Every structure is written in C-alpha cells, then in structure tokens.
Image 1 (tube, helix red, strand yellow):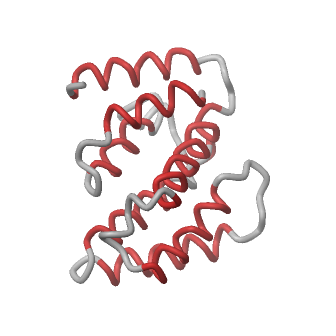
Image 2: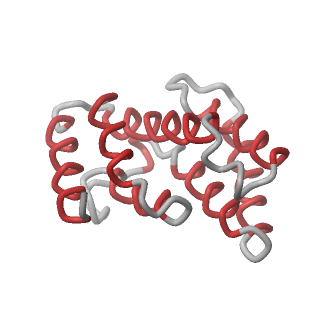
Image 3: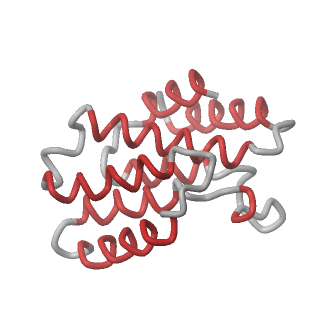
Length: 147
C-alpha cells in the first residue's frame, strides 16, 4: 500500500467517525492499543531493552482506558524524560516514548480549527513509521477493524 492509498484509507476512517463526539479519544485509545499489541508481540524487542519496554508498557496500559486512572501526569512526565534522555542513545526508544505521549491526546487537546488534520490519525502513522517504516498497511487495517 503506498502513501496515497494509506492517506485515502485514513480519510475514510475519519469520515466514518465524523459524527462521534469522542472520536479523538477513541482514535488515541486505539493507537495506544495498537502500540501495546506491537510491544506484546515483540516488534520492538530487537530495538529496545526489556526494562525500558516494561516502563513503556505501564504507560500504554494506562493510555488505553477512557476513564482517568489518575496516573496520566506521572506517566507523561516519565515518558517525556525517557524521550529526551534516549534521543541520542536509543532513537527507537525516544520515538516510541513520543508515540505513547501522543496516545494520551483527547478531545480537549485537539483543536479542529488549528490542527492540520481532522484527527491525529495521520500524525500517529508518521510517528510509528519512524520505528517501523513499513507499518502503514498494518496500521490502516488495525484502525479499520477497531473503529
């Protein structure tokens, strides 16, 4: 699947969610679930140490819940620290931390008027591609199935 067809598929997914007032939260939670599935299936294990993946996993599990668990601020602070500290030493870990930070986006964080896209879906795809460049078709399929 090329970038243009992936973009068309993303727009189709966004079209199907237009009437949903919680679509940003659903997209973000689905993204967190997608990242968690990738982590649990070992897709990051050759790039990132197990102890770092365990820290990421805890935050991903938190991000998959619509109801606030009260751990968001701590997870986000930990993720920002990991992202910053790993930029030079482990770019894959830094990018994954950034992806997980993005999975915490909710309606209140996404301004339709100033955002370049209707939803963060394409932004999410660009982020995960920095770690797994050929993830596009799998990403689109996952979101089509879940949303």
